[in-house]
Image (cartoon, rainbow, N blue to C red; front, side, top):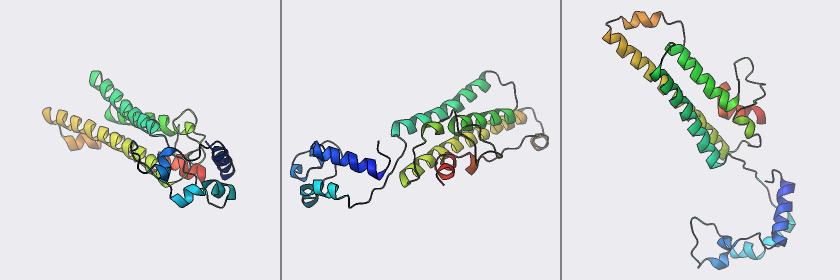
Length: 211
């Protein structure tokens, strides 16, 4: 895939030479022919002068590199798989408190997505052995931003839903045992932290590395 103007123009010229630059689907002479799915069609004027237009190189090139749809869906599924694995594990045999479960959960979600990021290294960490490392050519554009923020929203939604469910179950158990819920909460030494911008797909993939 060409990532700069020079490579793109070279590929366009080669396609024009091979008569593969304009497919039948986009040819205005085929407007009367039904085509499957959505289609865009060139104007008659541009279609008849397309080769000379490419040869002139008198146009701007905007490169929008985004995540393939199947890769995006795969990562969203992996997020859900992590949460489901944790839910199944604590359902069968919960040996630690809610704080430890929550901490383990977010570390796994962050680790698989952007690496071992922490507050002391989030600005200069090398994101190795994670999802982000496989998408180094992504640039900052409206399509990639939307995709990355979708990954962030999904991860946060799953994470906070797990927290809510864990403490709801804990409160129900305490009510059954007629324990003082408020006193029990005050003795919990762990805090629930918000893993926002430094730990986000968006910041680590396009904002930090492309700035």
